[in-house]
Length: 461
Image 1 (cartoon, one colour):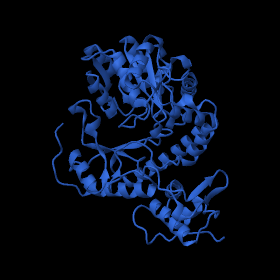
Image 2: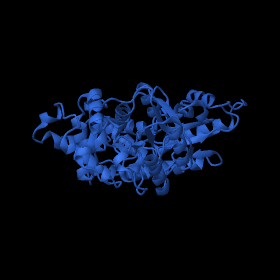
Image 3: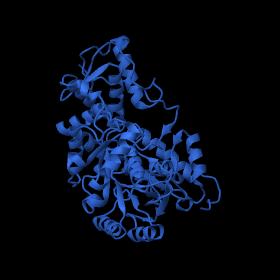
Image 4: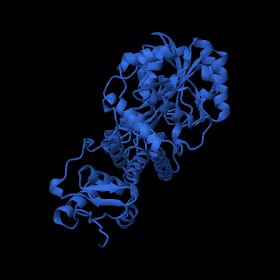
């Protein structure tokens, strides 16, 4: 048949949704019938003047409605008539706001991979084991997967020292609760992931900020803070730090490990973004394995909703951590861990990760072009960038104006351990837009807003 090219002129809203609506219309009118093959995504993207990601998301939405189905190596085919189509599962509510505040990838197409994996699981023996309570540290098979996953970045850990968690957020909370008592001081970067701040508050510990530079936590500042406070625990993000996107080199990591040894610090190394870099220095855990609790997850590099996390815990702290994890959740979601285990084994994880790296590098390049002339801090493997505002803006005012324009971003104050750590900046997630076309429009709006801002004096921090 002649290649089908939809007319999107009568469809409002995002282009990906217009493509899905056009497919439904064509099926309803008989222009597309069951068995017809849709155009390859790259070809249709070229003809429509949109990105491949936009077409991919449109096809995914049509697949969720049961209109089409993908066949590996063959393409995407019409499955059924529009009147027989099912509603998409759990369509995300946007309320007309593009959320560039949440730091997760929304464009990746997992539908085909998940469908194939669930079908394989459905034919396996012992399905009942996936809905039973699991051992406190997790099933041995899934802990072994965690050990294999960590080996990708150079960590050699016995599966017996791996603890499964409900994502990295739980791992952070469990580490804090296991290692620190209420009232203790815990060290972290002066600007750090907001989940660290929230977990510290819940654990009733005092979080002390350590100075940063373009490479992350400064070893000399860590040494002084440890000596002054007597802290036993330091939380550090060496790779694609959130929100600064800094990446430590090998020497900086070694210096942090030396300070930890000299001050008898326990290191909690959060490496949730580490797998996004094809090449990077080895984790701090490889330099100080006896004093480092290493944690990571599948949330950023594979699928955020599956909530699969892993901790590599040295023997002296192992039982404490396991007890806390058990008290928090009793059992981990074995089905989610089984899905990730199969993706790691059959190469799906590698394919998803490579696609993610390619897309986020393109988005960072796009942001660099749009924000040319402004002060930004990002990295080709980072989901986000930190945008230093012009002197005419205060961060809270800029966030409010952006929201009024339909774009949610986050003030840097959300990442500040103390008030003095915050400056006039915001964090923008490049990964949260459904496609590059939508992202480009949003970033252009933010750039123009920054150029035409109020003549307010800078906040005193």
